[in-house]
Length: 509
Image (cartoon, rainbow, N blue to C red; front, top):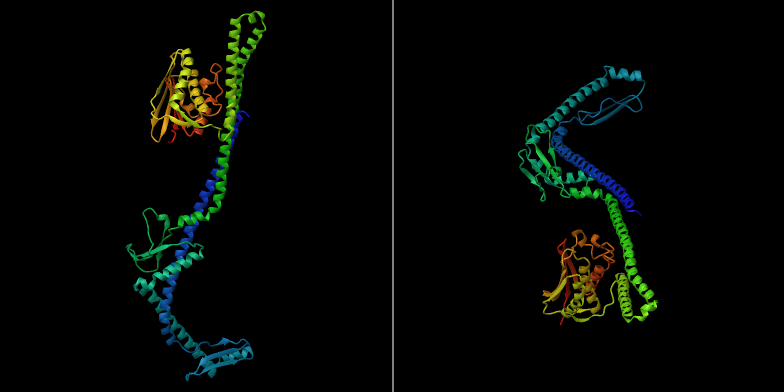
């Protein structure tokens, strides 16, 4: 798949996920806003219910106080001239001696009507009873009017604690909130018109700017004057209650995030695989080029051996033998480089650990490498200052690590400056040995420093056939140092040089 195609798919999928996340976030935001509005509306209704119940309690108090007076003044006659269910007229009255009477007259409607309007004794009694009932109604009405006047004029004079006890207010508030479906803890207080608290619950707290969580309701709004009292309520767990009510949205949001992470990981893997494929192709090209040179040299030497004149010349045979030997070593070295790849697929390499004097090993490597450095007009020096240099390593791999670093320094030298190589060793704290390999070569760009230890990776300056390599050397160095329990870092500056710093544990006595 082309890189441009991957980028197009990445952009489309990214826009899709961004749109999906935007829709979910906006939906959740609207849900939260709606829940807040529903909560506020339910609380306001609950507070109004509390205020109404307190007013009803006060009206009941004054009615019960006046009921005795009303009952003591009431007449005994209760029903006069009630229509009989069978047709006719029924009289219910109390005599002057206190006896109750119930008289029902039935018959023709005309006769009953004449009886009602006649001047006989019953009609006369009926009319006097009607007058008594009217007087009783007026008397009762006056008594009720007195009670209402008392409510209006005297209710506001009662102590507020008697009008609205704190326990009663709390119970009414709890019942009202439960009725509205708001089963949430609350704290409350009642204050007078000056803002001074009359009483409050133990946990009531308010803070500046917390107006959205404070709800206020006037108590007894019908009181004359402006000296009203106010019920204030706060909900400490309001935010948690709101967000808990929309918790069903969280799984969908979480799944979207997981899909986004998986998508991002997939894209990263795709790009890595794409880059790995390109590096493998580059590796094959370099490997082919590296193998062609020694094979061609050996083939040419073999052809020369077929020439009789060459076979008769000992000097020519010696030269051809030397070429074949050198090219065979070179070919074997390249094959070993390729075989190093198998080590990267293993979790751990097979090592033959033994105590090695790092100073002595590095000294031998420097002496061996000196001819190659001097061939290019450079010089190499060793400053082995470590007092304790015994390390437990695989000597072959340890030697290969130093050789790889020195070989890279020669490959990536500057043409306008004689090569200068320095290898040092020194003791550092925590019972460790530090080895540095420093050169004055072309250097490495900052963006490449984090990638140079990756398999098949080659910096742009090294991705040329005139600088041979497969991108395996530094990856091998990193893996081996890690297997030996050490660490390697690199410092570099373009056209100044590069310094590799190896830290490895000393042998514990």
